[in-house]
Each structure stands twice: as structure tokens, then as C-alpha cells.
Length: 233
Image 1 (cartoon, rainbow, N blue to C red):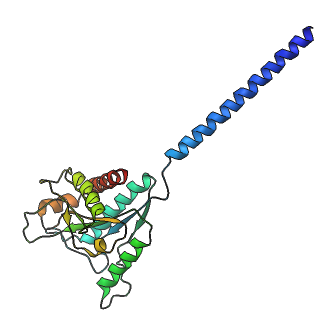
Image 2: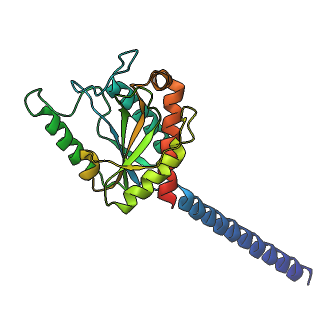
Image 3: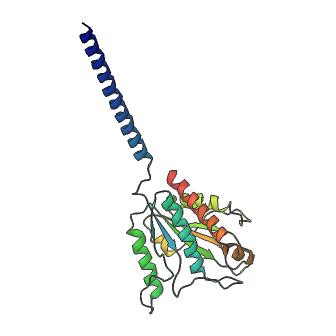
């Protein structure tokens, strides 16, 4: 009789242990599935276009003579880091100082533009952000401005999110609204696209700010936030 009771106790304990193991395994599987759902999606791609490059340096600083192309690339690289830290795949139209035109000969500018179009439209991206710096004959003009393709509702939506954030920069003295821009990279981009003119190099205050690495990081962070707000909308 005593042996029968002990056997029943062992049988009960065995069932209890197996149930606990099964519950632990189920919970672990559920946690794994939850973590997978929360993980960054590798199929989300953003193209970052650092304007100009090579012989085409863009505009230059009013005081320093610094090339727009170099500053564009610096901002684009900071922006790339932010997207990649969020688990988003990034394609850069250029990640070096050279242009995309190949040999320096007649028609190099259009070859450069066509190569950018090829990279942008073959990336399978949701969004394309082009980074530039502005220049104007009136040196009092300053601040960051977002542009979008005429007739593109999604482009306007993206540029609106970008402009909202750019208006919060420490160097923004006036709140702007996004504007239509007749730019090749906007007109030819298949992904939703916007172009950010991050400051006016023709303005000495803007130039001083953009020469600061901290300010370029601030601008990159604001562009990143605006893009993420668009993607989440």
C-alpha cells in the first residue's frame, strides 16, 4: 500500500515537472516571437543623396570658401548612422568625395544626375532624401528649407514633416513651409522624395553654424526625425 502511494506521488511530480517545462518553452517561444515582431524590418530602405561631388563642388561658403559638396556628405553620413541604428537599410548615392560622372568630359553633370537616378530607382526604397546647402544673392536670407516634387501628395507630406522639424533647429530664425522644387532628383525619383537645403552658405551666420560638427549632427537628427514621422504616419 505504501509503495503504491509513493508511486502515485512520483507520477504526480513527473507530470508537474513536464508541465512546467512545457510552460517555460511556450513562454520562451512567445517571447521570441514578440522580439521578432519588435525587431527592425530589414526590408525598409531609405536613399540618401549627398548633393554634388568631385569637380562639381556646388556653392561655397561666404567667408570660408568651404565646398557645399563636402558639407553635404558630412550631413548625409550622420543621417546614415541614425537610420542604420534604427535598423533601416540605407543606400547612399555617393559615400565619397568623387562625383558620379565617371570621366571628366562634356556632359559630366547630366551623367552624374542620371547615375543618381539609377541608384535611387534601383534601391527599392520607400523614401529618398537629397541633402544640399543653399545660396542667394541677398545675404540676409538664412535657414533650412524642404522641397518636394510638384503634384506629389506624398512628397508634400514628407516635406511637411521635414520642415516641421527643421523649423526647430537652433539656427532657424524663421519658420518656413515646404516649397515645390523643380530639381532633377525630385522629378526623376520613384520613391517618395524630398530635398533639404540645410542652410544658406551665402549668409555668414548660417555658414558659421554649418561648419560646426555639432550643428551638422543636429540638422541630420532633425531630418531623421521628420523622415521617421512620415514613415510612421
